[in-house]
Length: 304
Ligand code: SF4
Image 1 (cartoon, rainbow, N blue to C red):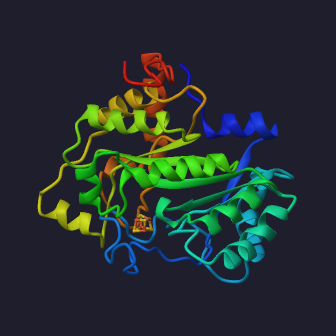
Image 2: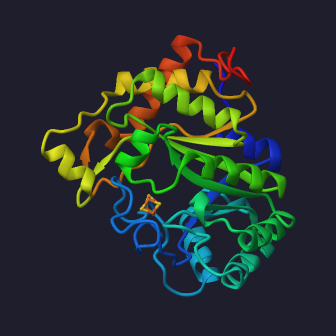
């Protein structure tokens, strides 16, 4: 069995485990404030960052609080500052520089990860990201979710595939690493369609990928779809079948940052099997071993 995990990559690069500190930069999202849309993505409850450190105090205080929760497990270790909630480049370049520069200058911060949308990466923002990447490794995460236009419209992603592809190229050319998120189990997508999304992410150059199962959270428009019986969700076995096929179709050098999503249990309506994260991960690992999974064994750089 072989797949390249986030921990594998961190040990290779830094010689130690690197813990993520989820932080909140106090951003909003153009898909909610009327710039790209008003209702947000159909599955999004609170900017997909339910676990980040609540916004209070300056960013150093947030880092200290987040560190104190994991320090016992990581004495003297290194950390990745992870800005997950909402759209973390949706501000002026001055505001971004003011927020992120002190973070990358800290000795305990090994790397920075910023989640954003590819339509929030103008030239001036790219310039700031390039400056940060010259100081510490910088990963920019983007929620592509699917390459299929019909699904993108259904989830109200709010930008075309080309915007994502152009963003990956622009970031890579500036020394910024990229991580794409994709959802397994969007309504109307066959297994082949889902695998096609993973293959496109690999071919278009992302350094890493995060897999999420489709979660239904209360208070979202997806919850109404679910409650009206308009969508069905995958069982765990089917999810693993598709996940394995996606991993076989990505490049061997890519890092798999996540194998499942982390729906906040407080709001999770379905699938309930996903709430037992330990069991889910154990079941996935057992299947990977039993099936002799090998990342990249079906990857081809172009259509054959
Ligand atoms: S882009 Fe992100 S924060 Fe904005 S609505 Fe979609 S999932 Fe939520």
